[in-house]
Image (cartoon, rainbow, N blue to C red):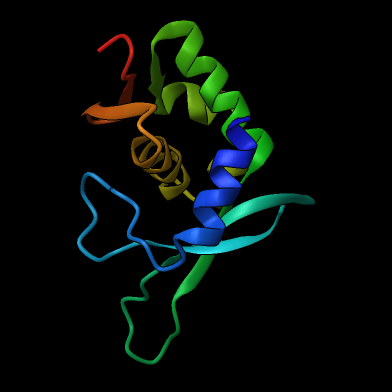
Length: 124
């Protein structure tokens, strides 16, 4: 069910800005692609160089599912948990954590609480 919601968001909201608590430039939904040998929501990161195009990163649907399970289990999603449990995702970039949180915000599942923490909207 969560995967379907994220796919719908990815397909119907291309170009939509992903909420990021400290981003100086917009990170935007690109669509569906592949990351770590799985289907994933992909997004663009602005390049700080005028000579370079935007970077593309992604979070797999199974990573979203794991993060959502943790959010529901504990009521919070923390960067500490992310770095420990989703190491491949974290290795691609720490921005993937705020992308997961931002997508959860867009879906009404979580809200940013404080640095490194998103809370379940049902428990907030």
